[in-house]
Image (cartoon, rainbow, N blue to C red; front, side, top):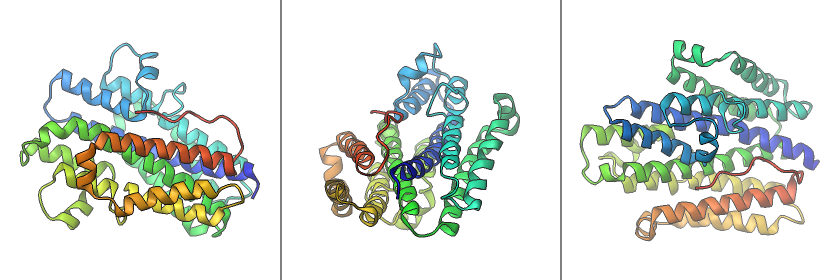
Length: 321
């Protein structure tokens, strides 16, 4: 496959997944903001949302103070924010258009219609129709895109690069949500069982579609260590780090070339670490340190994939923790 084609497919998938991830992050924080809390607590929560994406400095270039309305406008509509939902869906469509001949007509129409609908949304319309409903729409369009991809695309290298982009982006997002929200909620988690405590931890699980899975697997109170285990080490959880790295590694093996042996080795090493890791060891050594190291490895994999397979042009910088 031509590296330019692989590049567009890879980034089309990453941008679509990123739009969904941003919707998930904003939705969980919006739901938490509906609970009784002080202005300081509300500002800390929305500030944490910006930190998840590494966009605090970029936000303050446009807004003087952190507020719910300002963060939502910045992360949904702001065209100068390359990580806003609007920017991500536009970029996904542009990359899809560049390789329209490689995509099935169903996948192209899904991606294109998502962007056309996004252009119709405005802050005023969002307030009228409901913020949570908008986030559900973004998630649904991402689900639809993945379903159409798997249901209509030939099982060839094109599909593999789409899958690599999807799961590398998802792994990055899961780590960021867990790191920032875990630190924010951990003081409440020291005294478990309260209504607010349960609601906030359950909201965190819902942000990665893991609440029902947690109930099925653990059948007990929601505890911080089990939340971390669910999001990091359970390979049967679709949005966990372990599952994402398994998908990245398996798809890299299919598209491997003469230059990608070291990239494949590092992906395999990370996949093995999550497959055989123990949450007690991670918590004892420090969850934040583990996440920072994992994010660094994911960024390294992204850079190596670009060098081995894709067009060597500058892409939006990865956010930092």
